[in-house]
Length: 231
Length: 231
Image (tube, rainbow over all chains, first blue to last red; front, top):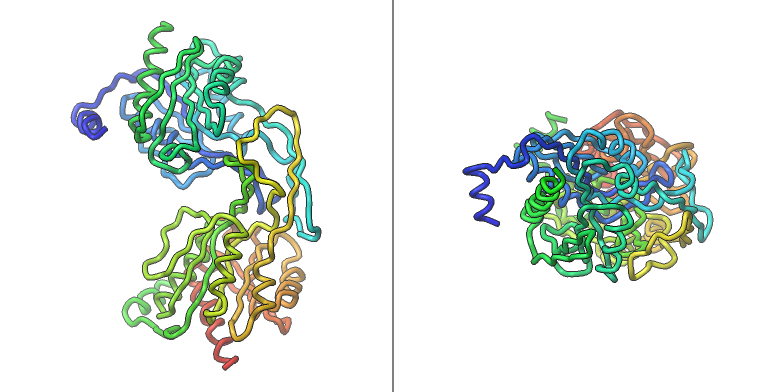
């Protein structure tokens, strides 16, 4: 990784020049009322690393992110969103004009059926929140895909390979980066990941513990190879 | 504010020397499963500003915070927590030995009745989450209070004064800092607040738009006056 970093700083590899890469990152926040919301554990680090790596390699980069504590890398076109619905709208709008999509955002699967306009006062010992399903952005991209390379992410806590194989096929992805978030070094908010690359033909490539920027470069290598295979 | 900053840097006012100030900050995160959680809009900035102001004025400062993107100020004793239950335990443990409590954390009122050990798979179009009430830490401190000065915060979106007066009396507080989070400049994540100081005798002092560090000093001025009044 250090070698790669030095090499890339001294002699930047511009192999993504001419390509537009859309990256999604972070969690989404689904409001219950103006104060409370439902969200996911995602620091945004993985997606921001992919955006940074892609921009260094010469791509035009569109980064669409939910709320994080991170600063967008220099040179990316950044759109901040809150909810899954907002992310869906931003992603679908840009999709026809991009070459590669790296969808690392942890989009909330469900949102509260109703978001209260005023803060809910707590008068009862228990309450229940009705949730409805959010649009499945990745599946929708899979349906609409023409020439784009579509890379998804999966954070799993059990049955990783089975769930990943279902997802890569069911959503018409070109590659799924599956991450067992229960492993040390692979969890949310860490600077490292332990991922498996899962392909639609059923092949699975386990990767070692890598820092997120190195993994970002590896994912972009794969995306570029997939893109060239499609030409 | 700039004047105050310069004065405080040149000739630090050590008027809190000898006092132990416990500050709570940030939101709490209430897990639904290992990936999803319920939380509140709180950046932690207000509480971290109070901790910083108090340590500069010579206090021993205990800062107990939920997850934020902030770095604890130098010189404070920091405890990071996730859930309301963890915050409650940490706060109650330290309470007997402190002189002033500034409770600016946005503690979740409710938590999921059950937190799933594995990530819940999304198979249904809708679902419902059963919530149960979290311990009311501020009310518990009000019940246990002996000589401590107890300062609470309220983020309101409607009926601010009515709700604040109920809270200051109902929870046995010495001071409530009430904040209409719908006002521009007073919302979550901003560097400023527009607060009202609400006292148990029913008096209300509206403050102008202030940056959070200036408001922190003002709150500490009030807490010190209340403390001296009690001696």
